[in-house]
Length: 354
Ligand code: NAD
Ligand code: TYD
Image (cartoon, rainbow, N blue to C red):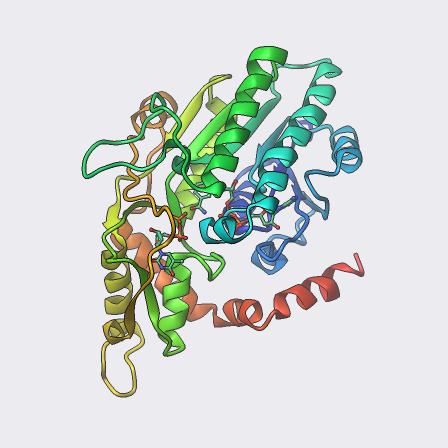
């Protein structure tokens, strides 16, 4: 078989690294990881596959037109899975500028480079631009109902507005320039290698460190959680089988209030890593000021990707959260390198010589 290369943007991030590991471990694709390595990019998450000859790393900003064009020309990819983004809602509230730059301008730049490359391809049959987006573009649900592919966009945070904008650009490049695109909109992910600023890894780490477990507002906001490897599987399936111009909503019907999530983590930790004083981690829960514009509920109807592409989640929340807590207990070095900032010097030491 001839060599087939996929570009993955944001491959050093939480979900991108799961996609790269899955492509290297369970497919024949060659993978080029394009990642500028912001605070969220961590090459230690790719240690298990980084010596594989099918894997290449390019430390490049997706806004850098010259280098992105060079990468397309050099590697002649059969597709691109675009995950690079600023991804944390709280950061977007404090400083939206980088979200506009990376999520909107960066996506525009990738689309233009992909369009130029695609226009010159002799075999156009396989190329696809898969844009990875979020359920947050649909806004906030009340107590009932689900998001689906036909839900109107109603983003309400700088993060979700920037992702919604990028989705619109991707669709426009399909309709206007016939660029072959597929979009995925997934619910909240959790699992190994998750940067400890998001709810689940933050709570696990704070619990183990004896710190407060901050719950915004009353803890009754609802998120629909999906184990990260199930999302990665959906993204690869969207590349291989997704219909051009279509979007696919991904979720596993695991709706939980934030309080339920935090209580579940505490109970698992009480069992797996009991405290010396025999007190419960539940006592560390602390209710703090609510997030500005906090979306109340997200919940997804994933029927289309299930029926049309045969996608199914392997983990439910009970199995996935237990695996995740165990992973953090077993991988404290990975976490400590992030908390101490050491992961960035690890990257310099291990990559400056390559
Ligand atoms: P992350 O923050 O963990 O990782 C983002 C990665 O992108 C990092 O490695 C970072 O270095 C890289 N990056 C950022 N700006 C870049 C730039 N300008 N050029 C090149 N690389 C850059 O994010 P994540 O949670 O893995 O999310 C990945 C994608 O999935 C995002 O597009 C996000 O919107 C989407 N998504 C995330 C979730 C979730 O729950 N985390 C759910 C649905 C969709
Ligand atoms: P987060 O992991 O930031 O994901 P998102 O905002 O993209 O859904 O937050 C998940 C939920 O947890 C969200 O409702 C906000 C809440 N939250 C807390 O209650 N405390 C925290 O410390 C964090 C980071 C989030």
